Image (cartoon, rainbow, N blue to C red; front, top):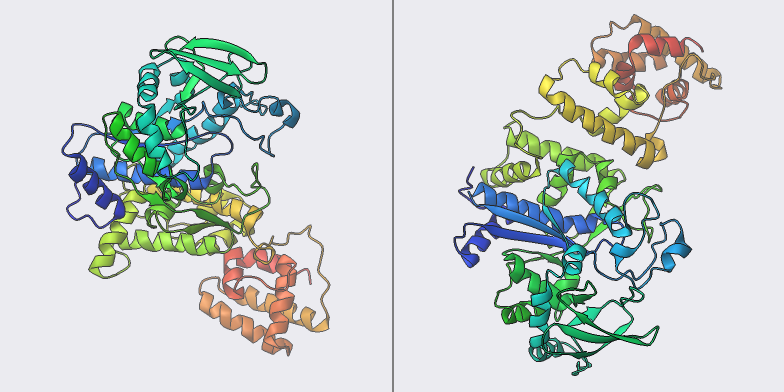
Length: 523
């Protein structure tokens, strides 16, 4: 489906790529990161931003390659606090992260474990990049020619880098770094280059010297500010966003867009994306710093479509929070309203409708569904789940108007809602309905009279009209000669062991007449 009007930022950037890079048989969009620890949801912002632009390009009929680089030949600089066997990991500091063991036993090495965490989750949100593993590429000498080219360009590269440095680099600086073949560590000093592929270096720990050939040994790699523009040319990158640190004045994007010219290429179209904060984080989310939330953590509370919606509905240069507190209820409501507008169930002006429709399309995993999901308020769904002790299939069975094509989406939403209730929701939001085995609550004389009066009224209710039940609640308080608040407090204590709860008439209706009578009859 070709977009006639570009209203969304992803479409605007797709148009910009086509305009600036020309009409090409294949466009390459790129992203990447060093898997030095838990890949967090802020990193995912870059991945999903690229995916949204890729989706926009493809919907304009373009052929697109989406590459994701794992910079797993970077140095292991710090042992994350959440990793087991800290002392063992500390012995691998200054070595490439791909050579560090995975002490969690998830994978063959430390880097691969962090990579798998992401690679296994991205398909859930409909993201399917082509992965490039830079350790494998460097160690197989794939970049030998590019490293030789960088060595030849050393004076020009130093000139560019010195434009942004307070302490200028001198001729002792080299565009490549060397890992020692003796220790695998990067504590080395390059002594000379023979003008071809030979590099002589000294291992500073052992005070040993060695000459290596870039074409046959796995020990050398380009420094980041040279590596990045080299890869733009190597892969023909047309689009790659980056965070604030890279896009700051004098940052790696500023230098790379000049250095790339030396390699015979041009900088890709780019934009700066902003940071993401975390709100209402629960205790079970943790990482090396205790502050990182992964994509997997987010998918425990947000459906895949809502996870995409969080990013599709926000401009990349806008900071926003991933919430785990009561804001979750509003975010689900925002998504449901967007879906209702898409299907014409909620009116809005033409300009807003165009944007809402596009946001909804980009939020979907795969094709846009033919009909809306089951539109149940998240708060009400939480109540249903708690009333049914988390039994998702029982909740779905209690909703007679659920359509067949809505069930799987509703099941996923139920799983997210139950995780949120049990892990992140405020204590006063949680409850469990009393059973025959639950202890009877202590009520004063007025409370007992109120509960008995209400039990009688519920027994007389026909079980149909909630409005009629609401009136019966107030009638019961009058019959017992107590204030309404006394009846509410006593009834909630009897039903859920708390003094407050969901709106009482609706709550009784949802629990069910027979079950409520059974509970209240014990008083």
